[in-house]
Length: 123
Image (cartoon, rainbow, N blue to C red; front, side):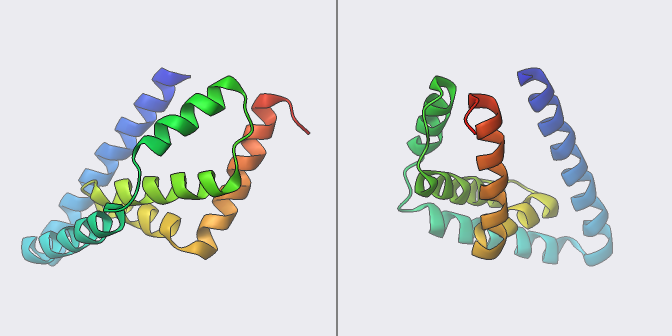
């Protein structure tokens, strides 16, 4: 399963960079650099007070089969959204913005809660 997730991540990264190159030809390098810099600046501003060790804590608790409080899931999603804004590319920026907006983050949290119940056997 781990190799599949890594291969999927690399595929998405290459697709995102290819999309970025296509947009660079259409809009021009200046606007692409400006939008990518603004996205990274927003992500760094949001990350300044976040605890990056939370993602490792969530992974350890998930592997142990422990129940994870929904506030921790939400903070973890905010971290993932910020980190995806730091990645180069417009698709990762779009994903980061969708995760950072509260109205779109709630369905993602419900989906993750549904998946975590399936793996731990809880009903």
